[in-house]
Image (tube, rainbow, N blue to C red):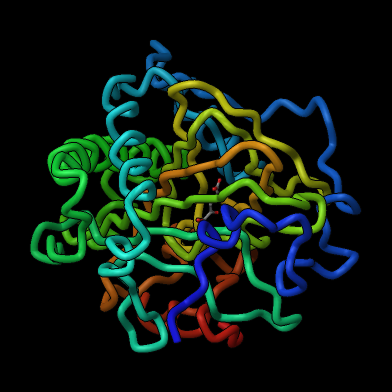
Length: 333
Ligand SMILES: O=C(O)CCC(=O)C(=O)O
């Protein structure tokens, strides 16, 4: 039997109530875990002329929030528009055409069109379909897994990939300097030119009872960094000081999440941000997350300059493949 897609379910005429597998336990429901209002998340402009101030802003945001919005990053608004158009066009294709790209994570085939079926302890599922594929390095890319329709998908995504590689370098340099390390340290610890970029397009259709459901449940990313943009519909929330904080949409800004691998390398000086996404009754939300990850064989542990007898290593050392295995299977790290 095929996987039931959220998009199909959402647009089937009679859906007035949320099917039970999407209704979160009472203590997880958005209606009972409302985000605090009026909190301003850090917004950092890459055109800040004083380099030392830029380094400080990035380091403070990464250590206090594990999250910031990046503006004046040099990516053309036109490219965001094209990226969003090709993603929307893919999800608007007839279901049969999308199913030709269906992935199968249970058999290790992560790339392609998917709906998360791995259930959590409460056997609840998320209100989201997605498309996932590797974008870099070119030696790891399998274009057969990328959408062939719309025909410009590949050209647009390759352009975006170039920009993501440039930004990854720039942000990793700033984060290295923020730890008083040589600029190239974090990048080289993550595999240098072998660093992988993964694209995940999330499609959250309108949901009949958004107060009871979650688009993506609370998690930290196992990546080093995640660089995310969304359409104009807000929905991302981040965990700060024991509360959910809603992140408002900011046009052309990139949402930067610190992930687990940077928390480990920095020995906890940078925080991997816990986040979730909510869904919407009227509007479809889409987001484009680029995960910056080390290749599987790279060994990640706290960097020696960042621990000593008084501040011992807080994390174990393991390959990214081992880390990923433990995280997927909810095993202790
Ligand atoms: O859509 C979002 O804003 C968050 C997506 C996310 O956290 C994920 O795909 O892991």
